[in-house]
Image 1 (cartoon, rainbow, N blue to C red):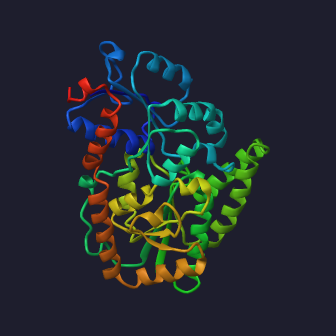
Image 2 (cartoon, helix red, strand yellow; image 1 turned 180 degrees about the vertical axis):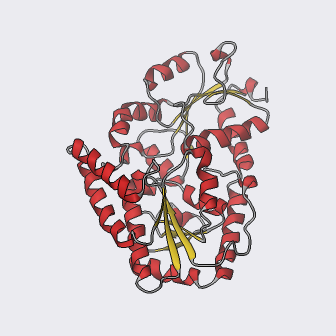
Image 3 (spheres, rainbow, N blue to C red; image 1 turned 45 degrees about the vertical axis):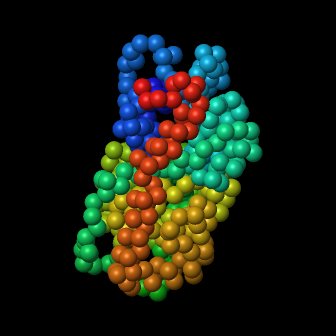
Amino acid sequence: MKIHVFSDGVRHGCFVYREEIPLEALERRGHTVSGGLKYREESGNLMDCDLFILPRFLHGDYPLVADEIKRCGKPLVYEIDDAADLFERFHTSYFQVRNMLPSYYYMLQEADLVTTTTETLAAHLRCLGARNVVVLPNCPLTQSWPEVPVRRRPGPIRIGYTGWTAHILEAAFFCEIMAALRQIRQDFIPILYGIATTSDTGVEWIKKARDAVNANPIPNREFGESLVDFVGSFQKVRPYLQWKSMTTVDEYFDTLRGLDLDIGCAVLHDTPFNRCKSCIKFYDYAGAGCVTLASEVLPYTTEPCITVPNTLDAWVRMLSLLMDSEVHRRTRLEEQRQWIRVNRNPDFWAVVREEAYQALLPQSRHALV
């Protein structure tokens, strides 16, 4: 097949998981991929391609592009990894995504195939009018994972959470958990990675965030309320919290590994939007060599994370158990890494993706080109 993928021109985490990794796996199976970030120059007639993929949210008018593709009789695939209609108002991309909702609804109904990350999100998209939905999970490049040494360093256990500004309420709860754990023991270092997208310290970032809210108080009201929650929680752990600002996607995985985490916390509040998310933090932590402890909510209850209810007592109890046994941490980590290797292999899922794409083509074109 000759596949053309559209892109917003930015190599972010979603691009890596939903375009770069899966499409490179298709190339290994003999297919040709153009567009995206890989090919800046196109040769020949674009309509010589067999199939077109429009991913996630793009700037521009999706319906016009989609109509032209369909007018030429070409199959159209819409790739989406978030429930765009369920974005919370405190989310930093809320208004940007709201402006794209007409194209989102249009694509769900007009695409020949919708590909997405989880069964929960697939069911939601079907309710919005998508007729042909196939679940293709996110898959990490496990072959690039380093081996996990027995114990990387002496000293306190390192417990981390990674997210960005859109996960500010989860970061606030992580700080609350760390403060509660600190009440009973001090043999650990909490690390917060990624809430700020600059090299600011936590205090500097909070000031900038407050200034942004005050400059536009009406549209930023919900984010401002979330910021208040975060600041209150942050102050409880500020004296001993390690703050690490977000890096580019090219540096993200090496930076995460360099944090030397023993336990990675996948804190997630139970909301309609979050239930439609996928377990990327689980894969990232496993690749970085730390065991994942997650909230007992979707999507983490569908994969072999260690999960706990979203109460401070439950989190503190399980963290204490994991902290007290390196053998238990390592055993569970190896179980988690092996499950991901087997069940989230990009080359295995490339076969499923290939079959879903080829089902859209005329029978005479099903053979590899």
